[in-house]
Image 1 (cartoon, rainbow over the protein chains, first blue to last red):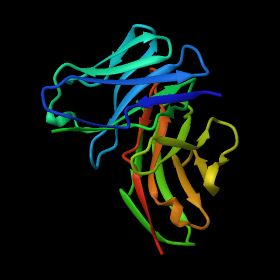
Image 2: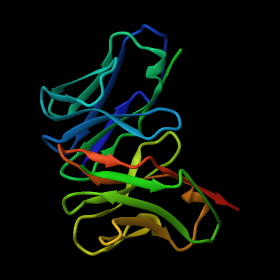
Image 3: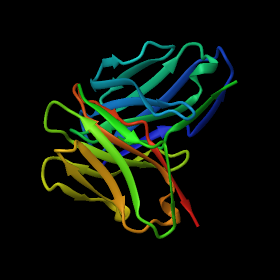
Image 4: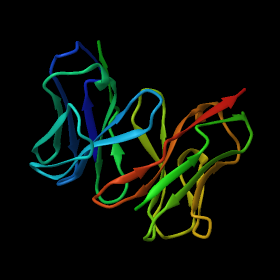
Amino acid sequence: SQTIHQWPATLVQPVGSPLSLECTVEGTSNPNLYWYRQAAGRGLQLLFYSVGIGQISSEVPQNLSASRPQDRQFILSSKKLLLSDSGFYLCAWSPTAEAFFGQGTRLTVV
Amino acid sequence: AQSVTQLGSHVSVSEGALVLLRCNYSSSVPPYLFWYVQYPNQGLQLLLKYTSAATLVKGINGFEAEFKKSETSFHLTKPSAHMSDAAEYFCAVKGSNYQLIWGAGTKLIIKP
């Protein structure tokens, strides 16, 4: 069966520091991959999605970037974090229609 | 373009009472519709999905949803609420470009 791993679960980072969140999927090949963010009291915001290695689509201009160096690996990065980057980050994969989510990373920028 | 509206950011019901969470969608094509549940500090879990088969869809944890094309609705129900149902619920419709279009979410509060 397919599983999705996302780490770390929580992260506290100072303003201006870099960020790297990693997500990997097991048990499938060529999945569609997604990064979402949930800010406090707000819904799901799609940040990036990828339909293949090296193919990244950005939904919202921001201080973040994404990469897909391997088929089942999706990385969310920032060179310099802002306070507004705080939130709950979710990785997801999709075979066709529905999406399956990782456990999320709670990022607090201080 | 597809869109999803969830009526009520918070819904409060008593334990044992009927749960009804409302979702209306807009779609120019036959929709694929989903309900997800999110517990605090966790990812989203798929409750159920409608993919143009039976209009009454049964999901996990005793939840079900009925697709009503004439009303463009996909409301989520459960006959008897349990304390463990307290969570946030999201409705979504399949959009273009491999994406899901999400509602704003409804927090379900269960009163003892």
